[in-house]
Image (tube, rainbow over all chains, first blue to last red; front, side, top):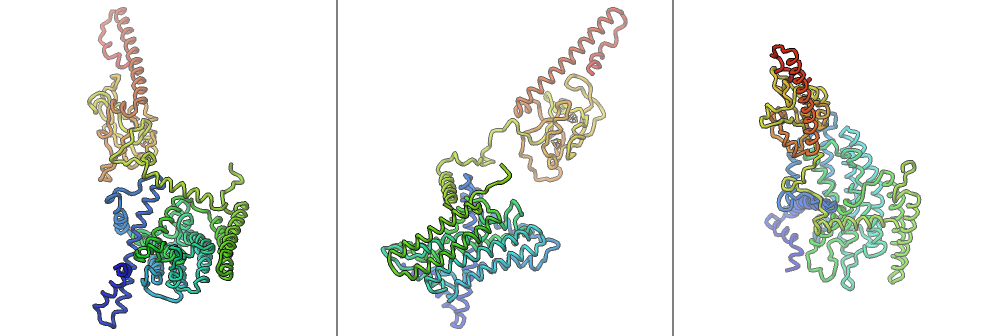
Amino acid sequence: MLEKADQIFVLLLHWLVGFLPAGWQHGAGVVLCVATIVLLYPALFAIAVLLERKGLGRMQNRYGPNRVGLFGILQPVADGIKSLTKEDIVPYKADALVHFMAPLVLVVAVFMGFAVMPMGRNMVLVDMDASLLFFFAMGASTELSIFMAGWSSRNKYSLLGAMRAMAQMISYEVPLLLSSVVIVMMTGSLSLVKIVEAQNHYSWGLPHWYVFTPWGFAGFVMFVIASMAETNRSPFDLPEGESEIVAGYFTEYSGFKFALFFLGEYVGMFGISGLGATLFLGGWSAPFAFLSWVPSWIWFFAKVMAWICFFIWVRGTLPRLRQDQLMNFAWKFVLPMTLVNLMVAALWRFMGEGLLRWVVCSAIVVVVYAVMGRVEMRRGRLGPRSYRYAE
Amino acid sequence: MLGEGILKGLAETARNFAGSYVSRERLTTVQYPEERVAPIEAARVFPFLVYDGADWEAGLRCVACQICEKECPPKCIYIEKSKDKKPDYVGKLQIYPARFDIDVSVCMSCQICVEVCPFEAIKMDTEFELATDNRFGGLLHDRKQLAKSNEYFHTIHPTEASEVDARLAEEKAKVEAKAKAAAEAAAAKAAAGAAPAATPGDKPAGGGE
Ligand code: SF4
Ligand code: SF4
């Protein structure tokens, strides 16, 4: 029975395509899976937006939306209707075709990433050998759509926002990749399915998730930071800094195209959270051995939602960085840390089993973090801002 | 160590998040249509015309001098003078506004009209629910809509209204004293000259210049 619950979607799919002639079954199965993904994530998007608006409100001691439906749960519906009924304005001098294509390219690119994401046991659309690589390639192509949007709008704010986004995303792409490379080094595979399986065993009831190792934890922290920057989340939301450049690259978008950008951003967040959960938090595996009877897909989505909640929490806490702080942080702190982490992972691999490697690897990570943090803070690159002329 | 501040900040927001469900004092939001804050005396939204007595048309203090119309920065006041005259609060005959319109959508609540009016005739209101579904006629308030009684003025701005009343009473007393003096002088003159006293009746009104 529990086995069935775990595999319910797989069984459902087999049952549905069973009605078709044999030659059609494979194609129909793929179409069904794609349709499910394309419907599921917008639904999650609605939930996430509601959570974000309510959560941020509570963090600022406000109620948040509480008028539409019971406790405001229908707010996303109202938002959706509003964005659908708004006028779609294209600037007179804009490059109409590129302007139109940009949100589509974004949405397509962010959805592509889910093709290789294992969302539960046996629940992956395409089990590629190099699925991690595929995911990063798709993630990187969102930059193209952002630049398309910024460039085609013929608006200085859009262009500035797009330039900021490019600079930021390219800078943080490097630590994002390097922090996931440790996983590949340990697993010896680029396949996300294999990575989850490598983490899905237990000792004393506790899982072997990579986040519970020194190099895994360091990689996890760097990955979280880089993923926030990749998805333009606060505190790295410079590309859409309202106070300086209106809405950044989507200043000139309205109505449904704006909603598509919004959707793309959130689905991108789900993608990167799903990837992070897969790499470091054991994907669809249960956090304790005695909980492994709970269907695997529940764990995957619970981890994604927990990750999103953390993003919201951070957004409610931190102010926006300045451009130079952003760059300094990426190139002078996160990148060296990920490089050190590569060394630590290699050391871990060659020191063999035992307590010693735990002590040595943790010590290296902590010492490097503390020393680099101190140096950077002293030089004033990170940490509180000092004013030379004011005060 | 680097990151300490971030952790502290996260703890603070977490405290806010949990606290807002536990203690209602944290939530400062006033849920407007159902809940309202008590009106604030210094608030000002949109001008209104003060009238004395019961009849708004007869009691309007405005004498259509058009100073406010000229001074209003966005030029949202429109006044038409009357052809006839009516007595003002001291009894002197004055013209009055046959038309007095203010456009809500243009008024910027600067209170300059109030500052310049020499007759205490225009004051700021605290009424803020001025929304309408007619964006042309609905936003143009005519003198009937603008006229509000002095009692109303007392309820919304008690301090200012009392000052204004004191000032007006003083002026009125001065005018009356002058009129009385003039009447006495005229009476004395009449008594001295024993001339046919036909004019003293309308003299006091002219003495209130
Ligand atoms: S408050 Fe200012 S803008 Fe409004 S009517 Fe008076 S002078 Fe004009
Ligand atoms: S409101 Fe005052 S300033 Fe304006 S026309 Fe009337 S008396 Fe003159």
